[in-house]
Each structure stands twice: as C-alpha cells, then as structure tokens.
Length: 65
Image (tube, rainbow, N blue to C red; front, side, top):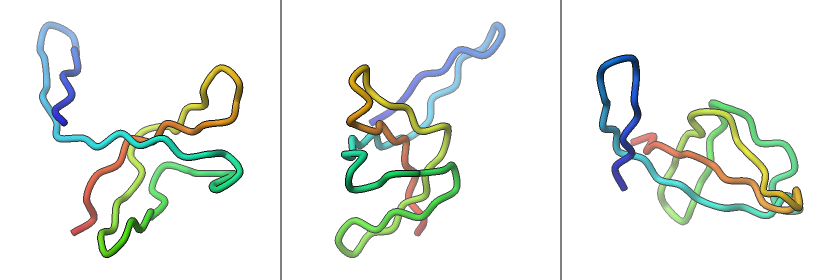
C-alpha cells in the first residue's frame, strides 16, 4: 500500500504495510524491532499506536529484505 505524507509544501509517497497485532501477542513493540511473518522479515518503522480500547497495536512495517 502506498502512503502519502504531507511535509511542508511537498508530498511524499512511500511503500508501507500496515498490520494490526493483539497486545497480548506483542506487548511492547518498538520502532526498529524485527517482525517475522512466515518466511518474510519486516522492520517496524514509526511509532506503534494502540486502538481506543488499548487491545490492538497498529504497526507500520517495511520489508527487511
């Protein structure tokens, strides 16, 4: 998925992958952590955020390949 980010008068397009993970499965994710899904590895970029009920993390991942 492409994400469009405004920065000053410009806009940047970046390839991103957003995933939701239960807090019970990943209690303390941090920027730079490595996440393995099947045979693929991803790095958390940006600050992980929780949903309103604080049960789900939303993670912005980039491929580590």
